[in-house]
Length: 129
Image (tube, rainbow, N blue to C red; front, side, top):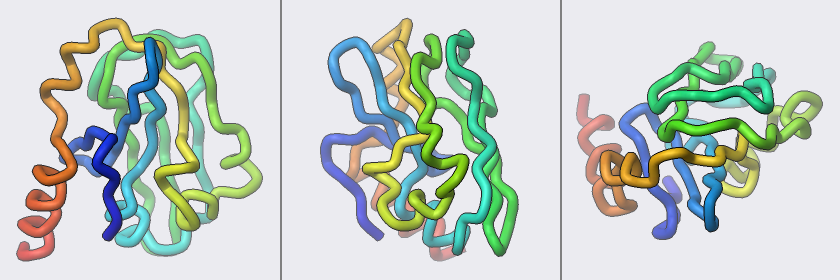
C-alpha cells in the first residue's frame, strides 16, 4: 500500500490534498487494491454544496460496488471527467487521479482526518480483521 505524507485520510479510505482554498479528493491506494479492477465511476455533479460525510460518488469494480464520501464541506468546483471513460485511472494512480475538487468552507474539518502515519496504522488494523 502506498500513502503520501502530504495528504489527509478518512476511515472510509478517501484522501484529500489541500492546495490554497481548494482540496483535491479521491480514493486511497488501499481502497483501489481492495476493490480490484475498477470498471465504472459515478461522479458527483459540479457546483453543488456538500457536507463532510456526504456520499458523492460510486465506484464499481469487478469485486464490489462502493460508495465514496466527501471528507470536507464546501462546493464541488471541478469533477475529473476523465474517469467517466477511463475509470481504471484510479487503479493506475489513485493519488494523481482525483475524483473532484472541493472549495472547502471549513478548513478545521481536516483536524478530524488522519495523517499518513495514523492512516497506515488504521489500515494495518483493518487487515487484521
